[in-house]
Image 1 (cartoon, helix red, strand yellow):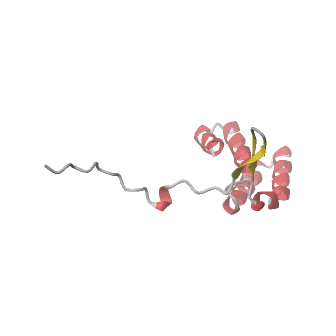
Image 2: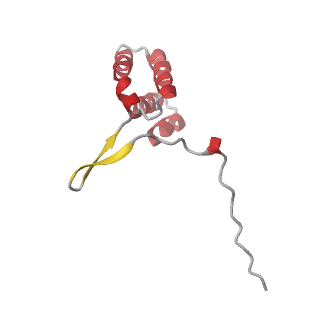
Length: 103
């Protein structure tokens, strides 16, 4: 009698998979590790500083749009996710906040 093969679920389509990140974990010494970000993160440091100024003076709508634009170009910009998560929590949009903090 032939054995039945276990049913295997097909891999999810590429559009449903989590995007690949370019953040790497690298050794920083014996027993120590650090995150190494792609160069695109450093390239956006000035833009991120401008967003923080927008938030400080209360231009939250402009800051949110700028953060979304920054993330379209570099989804590894964790500081942008953190800021968007914080702004979402302040607006009591807990699902959106969890989404950005989950990144």
